[in-house]
Length: 328
Image 1 (cartoon, rainbow, N blue to C red):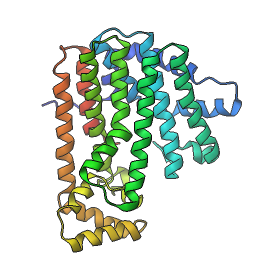
Image 2: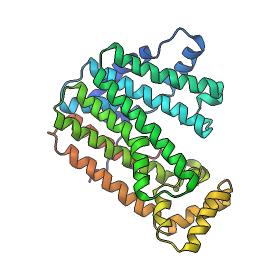
Image 3: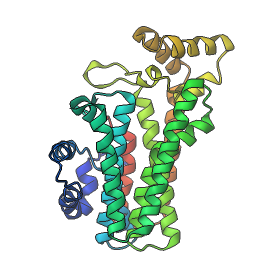
Image 4: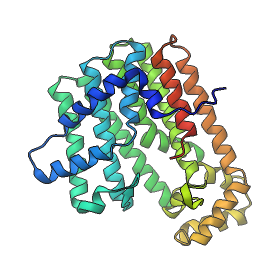
């Protein structure tokens, strides 16, 4: 058992030079002559986050072959799409902060945020077209469709509060895992990997993405940061995630009605939300979700073990551990 806590820098080690080169490549891809857009883009680059998705692209290329210019294009496509979706998510959720920074809509209002998200998405599509990366464009377009469907499916089910576990996994595959699967698939495609390895890495990205989203869903019920309290944001937004879905199918009809009433009518009442969080914990919702998360962790590791030992494979194993053990 690996007890050493893995950092992002540890994961980046085999592709350190490539990631440094990617910084410039990504900045160039966002250049524009529109002053307002240029200011916003610089702000976006400043709060770029951990760059998990470009890392997945480069490591997936390295585990199957050689990193090429095609790999940089693939990494830029996925990062542009990911950034665009985050900006649009903040608009939809009316969120004014992300990772300790003000969101784009908080600083420049909703209209500018939507337009910037559209700009970034179009830039990604044009980079693929300008470089004749038609296969990459097809894969990316499919991811955009899946992510949009996932968000709309979650919105539909949140209104009716009738999400089953099967529907939950369909939602998180579409809204989160599909992009990670796109990253790993594009990395393999850019390295000219054979079809079998491409599909293995796509499935690896899918399993990793599902585990990643389940970890996010657990955060909502666990203590956060210095305040030491769960956020309960999913409940406040009437989103049913796996901890609650599991509990609702095993409790009495009276308990079920009580829980759904909180979500429907008292979802903005912190005291009621905390009561529901405690209820979900007591009924084993978090334990069940963790067990499922570890199942998908193991599935992803089983795929990696089919590849020969290498620095890239070790880094991908570390990214799985990082996903499961992260605090944010």
